[in-house]
Length: 383
Image (tube, rainbow, N blue to C red; front, side, top):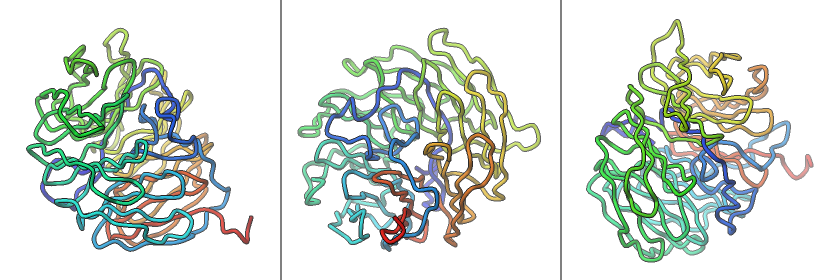
């Protein structure tokens, strides 16, 4: 996801992470296995936490070259990787071999991350078209047009798909035929992806609000003023919200009291938080444009550790066991120990990384802005 400009060189996602009730994506959507990564943050609560495990030592297994840069975070279901490119194509690539299965031509650049539900892939493009594509064949099923570009990725509730647009609306469509069920107007771009919990869509836009929108009616149930511009997606756990802002702050918000519990701020560097956070019961991991990754206590916002990566972090971290993985605009993919902040793995791509990692089937997949899709895991000979 890009920051709100027309340039495609800008990046994916600042940080808002909402903590409410977590329901694993596999429970809400039974067609998705626990080892898949079907959407931008891995599950409907947008926590950025993988169920699939990774080997201790990651090796490069394959690369796939698209026509232009990759800002889209890949989705992984079964043995297929789905990823969008600035060249306007959605690619379906074999997870095991890196071979192309099919590609689908959209109306314009693709910056949104695809979401897979059942046998359909959903995503938006820069024209404002929202596409539903057969996941097995790449055949177009339907297209719904909004009035501006779509960077927000989709989430699902029953027979409904929910996403945001730069036309300042949050949309709810029928997954069957793309017909409009409702749309809710905000006061700014809807840049991030909505989280789903307890009958509401939780959305953050560029209007400084956290909003809870009824999935049934499309009416606003709650709006919490956060005080800063937000460009990230919310993640949900234990009725609390964790939000990184363009005001150099990370916020801890309690939905039950509608209050900000704590504020964390880098005392030495005044830069925005743009990537979405990854959250567990014990740690929140977030990268910033201060060229650092921060680990905070979810209860208090106390800093546990920070790690200097010497370049901007617009790639949202993914937690896998005791490690957090992310990319940097300096072209390095890192793995850090979430307990100590120690670097335990890295890989140099040579090109800026704005996409976030995806973890499924025992493999890590991520794209870079020179159009290369990377897949890491363990080679069969090493098993």
